[in-house]
Image: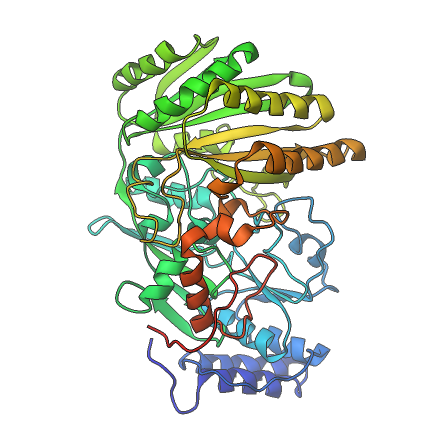
Length: 534
């Protein structure tokens, strides 16, 4: 988009809100919406005027100016709409939640928050591990920006920032295309892509962020801009793994997508007594596998169901070829007690990974957000680390012992360790080529524990102590941590998430959000000023 016209968008946005606060009822709505028809045609420019804390009439003016909806604490929908996916975040009290219908709504909300000097947070799927999809001020929800279109000639998909993964996979699959991404069906595409995006096709096709060609977003001065290789290339670089909510509110993405390959799934389960040998053998086997093979190794405490040790994965190819590859794992590890290898359709494979294989696409949504949804929020805590070298038998045994400790200290909770194989197309990208710096890892470890409403408080506390102990005494802090598994307890998080790319990310932050309006506990810090936009 072009830069500011003489009467800039920010002035018009503010004018419409100020007019709206002095008019009542239907006249208020008509006047503000009329102004909205005009301001959508004007880009914004930065001003420094602030209006003080928002009054009731100011909120009414914002509500009237939006094509979407504004939910306030006295609305009946507020109690549910304020919630995030993770049920542990129960004390969330934003001043308002704006369900934006278009990018112009987003710009109005950003302008409102900065003008009134209140916190704002972008929310796509609301899955932030740290609860950073909410704030004390204005939650800018983009879940209604969920359109998906696919050009099979150019292999480019345009995806609204609020699209849920299950809908992305469904839409792309109907066109015979895929985008490598995560597994949870209700995760929003924005948070996933901006922080990296690791999934079952990543070793073959790269991370979600590696397939990001361009994005549209609203920056802190309420500009709607497009970041691409030709324009705002530094912002595109930062958006490819630099974490969500740092530079603006994303409204739309363009991704490179890929024709569907033949897909084969496998799952091998092992006796718990063989867990250590399984893990020790799996890591070099996974690292040496062809790019077409992704695998995951799980060591889980399942409460009353005991322990689970398994290796599973997805192969871009036929079962007969996968059988030959699995023979290598069988030679290196004890024999599995259960085996499955079978062909799968794309959407069915993603539903298996999402844990909703028995449900329809419509049902693979949160019931609180979709009347057809059959899924519910869950409560959990997590921590992550990376593995950058093969494990010795002692190291593998320590990992197994760590899961056994969780089962002993918190026997009714579920949790453990899940290791995702890296390598392939993930590691083929140079660490500085995108903001995602973790290009030398063999695998990423995610440690989690989850609980229910009937879990005893002492067991929840035991789970938290377990995670803290893992971070201090079991994980290698020098290998870093995955920013999409954002961890509020991580002390040296800037270098753990971003490593050698941190300084450049700070410089981009300083150019696009110099006043640090997009700020939360683990947002990118602002670098010293002085540089101009690319």
